[in-house]
Length: 100
Image (cartoon, rainbow, N blue to C red; front, side, top):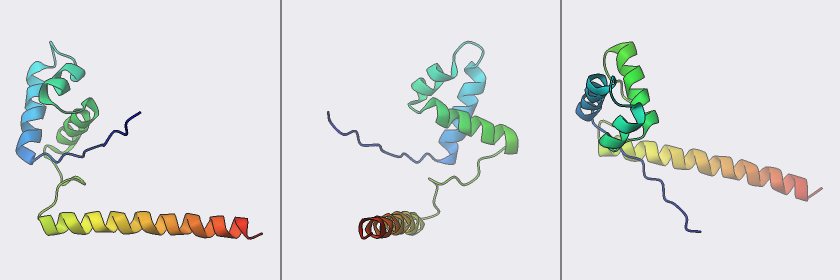
């Protein structure tokens, strides 16, 4: 079986606003799944945007939105470091268990 590669997309504020407006305009005669499929996004993503917009009236900066490419790279490197540190801890515990 082939491995599936998950790709994370980043959407700008304008797209999110248009998606929420599209949902509001069509929710009476379409399901959330149909609307999200038409927009090319996941239903859970659309639901999150709708919730955020209805609670705050605007979109905050989500984890996928960065002010610059530099900030995006820093966030990626921090995630990579955190993952590596976690792997090191697992290996340390494994060595401790195996050395007994």
